[in-house]
Image (tube, rainbow, N blue to C red; front, side, top):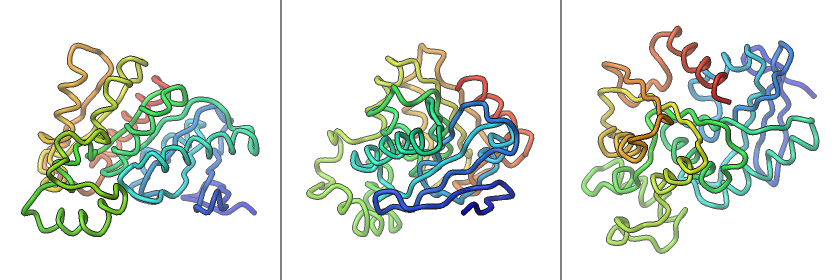
Length: 242
């Protein structure tokens, strides 16, 4: 049975025990897929603009917001499922905000053949920064409640050489020529740009694969652009590169 998601028809169902959604464009589909990789209903301006351009928008809930290999594998099987069940085929565009940025890079790193381009906003890319920062009350709570459950046995003393950092996927993205558009707020005190996104800039230095947009006077929230015209700019970039 079709429901409505921000005015667009959608189908909600269970996939391998996880809540999943497929949203259908009102206009003729263009054969492109945006997958919201975390925080399904949060700040959907860009996804709505992609639907208006004929994209499908899809998502499947994660086990953890810290981008385990298991969650990446579930996404790959989910995309295979919607190709078979709905005829929705083609490479996807991971859309990731905050911890969704970790999911976007990790998924693309494990499955570059399934990804055309990536949109990330205030992305968590360096677990030493979030949630690994010692002495930060929020990080301490997230570390104890979530991170050590996602990665059993992890200790902060081992975090510098931790192979699961999302940033470690940068070389795979460059090798496969997967372009990335990244938005960040100049006043983000939660996921500090210099400790996360700036390191991705450094990794992509010398390539033309990374576009960054700085939003002045914005903190970690709200994700997305303050100016709706800028959301259109992001959607236009995704449409061009997907």
